[in-house]
Amino acid sequence: MGLLLYLNDFLSIIFPKLCCGCGRGLTKTENSICLHCLNDLPYTNYHQQADNQVMKLFWGRINILAAAAFVYFKKSSKVQKIMHQLKYHNQAQLGIQLGNMYGKQLAKVDIYNTVDLIVPVPLHKSRLRKRGYNQSEQFALGLSESMKTTVDTSVLTRVLASESQVNKSRYNRYKNMEDIFIAHYNPTYKSIMLVDDTITTGATIEACALALQKVGYKHIIIVGIAFTVY
Image (tube, rainbow, N blue to C red):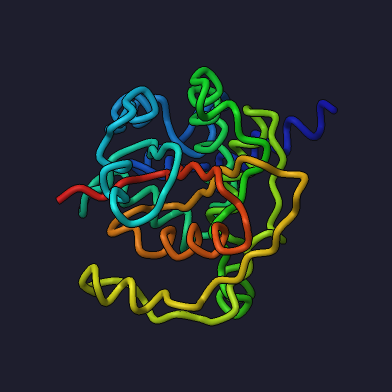
């Protein structure tokens, strides 16, 4: 055990673990994001507001019970750096950490604590092979840890690879997501928490929710890591 600790300390000097938000070295008690960045993140507290901006985004589009996101997303912000690390720099554990943190808050709110299944927005198999993991699934696993709720990746399948959503209008984002997802009904589950990494126009997660509703799921809650503000 002593030798292992020595090797870990030695490796941390040669290959220091850096904060995904600011790039500074992490202490032994910090995980992926330093305490300074955690205290500085723009938390939305939307889970405490029934008619928050994420919920309003879906008004008149899909019938859902609630919607929320953990933090605000802006271009060139610390949150953008963190999300970029999560998606493109093999920082899968970062999604679990964020999910675990937010799950502890959601578990204290009755409507979120009623879900019996967490479903991540799926990646197409080609993109999953390239990235190695689904960042939304990692977030879902973190939520599951703190909320004591099942994650099931078989309920929702992405059958087509879509074009990038970047720089597309809301309408074109919606058209880009048509007929991309297929849902599979399991009568064991009554209330689903549908989770994604970043919610911008909501086109992707709307397409997922519609696929779930089409096969019989009636109680859907939407949760994201980040919500884009302009």
